Image 1: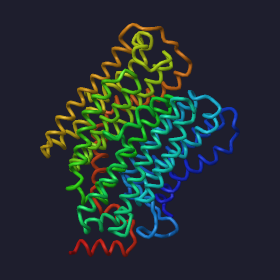
Image 2: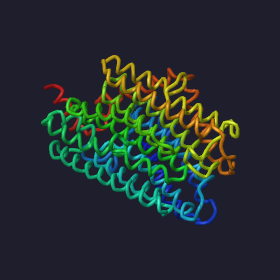
Image 3: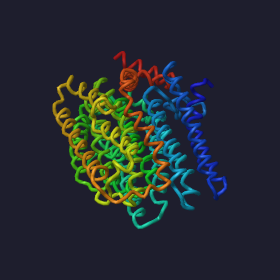
Image 4: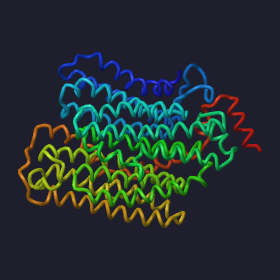
Length: 504
């Protein structure tokens, strides 16, 4: 087994085995949370190592039981999946560290950290899998672990939110299975690189119908308008550290999968699905921004703001050019840092005032200048003001839209930027600028400061590395758009089939 194959295996097995082993540790004290930090640290280190190998040597894969796709299931890491794996690992590590310092209670101490590791395994599997049915399996692993995390407190707010989350995601699972079943019936395979060969040969209308079902399923995961209704209440009832972790990973997994599936195996359905993707992107940008501004709760503003930012991400794949895809990917990575930092700031504010309602806050600018600085950097980045990360991400995306004369995307993106700035200004006026009750300055705020500071610095100082970041995103877009990259994992017979199709 090569080094790359070993790393692909270990980066998945580490959180999966870690989640199981954590349940064997004592139920008292902080043994499980400390061990969880160690597991997440190892996962982050392996992810970084894998990224370096992929960047230098190209695609790395492992086929289980010696069966190559399409006969067996394989995990594979290209620049696209390896980069998002690193980004998710950073967010998860910070979330685990914050949860160790801020989450309390017997249920959370006993169950929370094993569940986070199983959730990490599901996210890792979703990024690395090369098979549609296996992707469904890892979605279900994510669903069950995140559902229990949301319901863990068992209160009057948590249970309805978790049931809404569960119900909508089960509906998404039904869409997924139906779409995958249609695709298998038409092509006889669910291997993604094999589908890229066979799907263009079937009736495009039938392929488009199956694609719409998959898009609906992934859209629920990504919180695309109007499929986002599970998210605001779910993120509102979670402890702040867990809300930040989920905000930085869960919806991004949906976006990553949309990019993987609709630029690879379902790329031939662009004519049928392009208008749907474009409509979802534009509606999410504008209506998500309006919904966020209309809220009066700190975390609900941030949660609904994710809907608007997901619209930018979808615009990249809807336009479909390498430049636009690179811009959408840059936007996704930027949002994982900047928006997650804002969720930690919201956690600090709630700890200070005992409430997430803006009308109950005030005076943070004078009472906590350090928190104020973190908020301003992250808010400016999310709004897309120069020189922060959001500006460069939106600039890349708008350049892709301009090159293809997608004026509606440009108009929607500018409108959404204004709405986001208005929402951030609303938070500033209510929580920071106006006079209010004296903050309580609870000790647990320290558990939010380090993650918020780290992520805000990533978003704030990204202008120092714009050129490398854009180069990485362009390579990610090239890997996605080139079907021969993933085709290397196929069995010889399938590769011969690809050559035969190419020669026709």
